[in-house]
Amino acid sequence: MTYEEMHAVVMGFPGVEEGQSYGAPAFKVGGKFLTRLRREDQSLVLVGVSFDEREMLMEAEPETFHITAHYKDYPSVLARMESLHPGSFRNFIERRWRHVAPKKLVKAYDAEQA
View 1: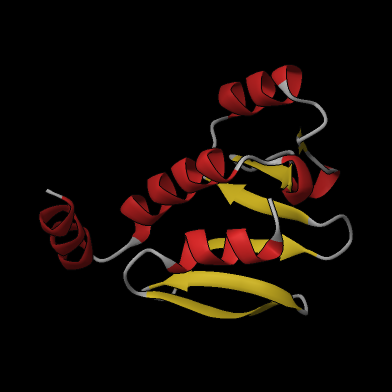
View 2 (view 1 turned 45 degrees about the vertical axis):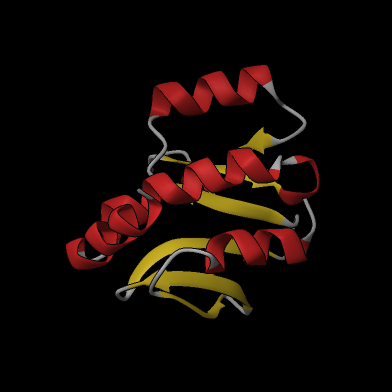
């Protein structure tokens, strides 16, 4: 996935705001974290991924999914943007967006999709 594809996916959800975190692009909704790009390894931080799911992802696709010591105690996984499929990324972001977005935005989004 390219940066442009990633940007289009995440900005496609209502209320998403772009900012900076650790000097890299970051995205929030309602002031709550969605994802950010790690400049160190061009990976995206995917939050809200259970420890079991993370292990399964890293085992199934080690070229894409990984973790660093900093994230080991958090329900999250890192995904190398270059090898992450845009559809998979969209699924991760939608799940996180639904969890943290204001309920009014989620309801409006669902009504629009129906």
